[in-house]
Image (cartoon, rainbow over all chains, first blue to last red):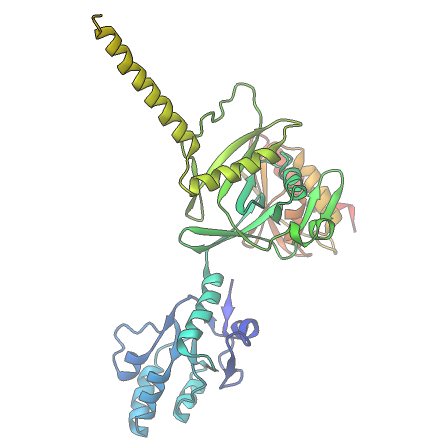
Length: 321
Length: 88
């Protein structure tokens, strides 16, 4: 997605308490990364590693430095500083730069926005917005449901019953995030979050009925706007002779946008209730998160029993009585 | 894998009824069929997905079919587009 200064203003003007110091200047310039730079050193003359393509934030330090310079020094400073192409300049705390600063910015068609926020608060708020826009995104054909607070992503071929499963779960009090098309954003190195497409919202298509609105039918408690994806549930047509996981001791993992999450393959056959299985998948996942791996504990206990029995047998065999 | 490019020619674009018609056709095949518009990719067998494209007249769609009957699948889907869904 293209992010221009104008779009940033339209989206977040109030939240970031922005006020344009040069109305309309540089609004069409594009921001192409989510990073912020404090240009103190560049203003002072050290421009070797000046990260000029980032959003430049001027705080108290930068502005009082500029105010300490006389006209000749300012010209010297700005002719060098403005020779770099910058997407956007922000001045925090409602401060005003020297008039010359705005002259140079206008000549270079670079937007200058003022905010009433402190530098730290501004950077925190704008970073969240920028990270969200520049975060890696993908769409997946599947359904995302919050089951007991765990985000289950259902995937599988069309007609396998993803929507029906979602409907069943909603009926049992779980919350639908998205059906059919899930928009996935990588929000942090290990976090992927799913959302519905804006146009589709919480609508769903059920074969034989058509398009239904889950929020209207089941109420606000049946939906969720976004949810972290924690487990992928792959629905497959049950095949005679195919082998399915019977122990659950191997942790199968899949990767979405470079984030690894566990997956389970669930064979489905007509009339099979995957709702209860889904609830168990969620609860089992929670147990694992809290450090309890049932399958592994069970297997360990079995091995211990076998080992103990061996020692008893050895003892009995060696017993001369 | 078979790729075909088409342009939407009916005046109303890919609205609900054409979307349903398209999905019905796509669902007859075993191959995976993907419709791509700009950088948006959706499953051609999913009606919500196809409607999400909200493709207007003149927009370019790439049909990508992959599977045992990919050639027939891509051609059948392209035919639905090219026949303007039976509309003018």
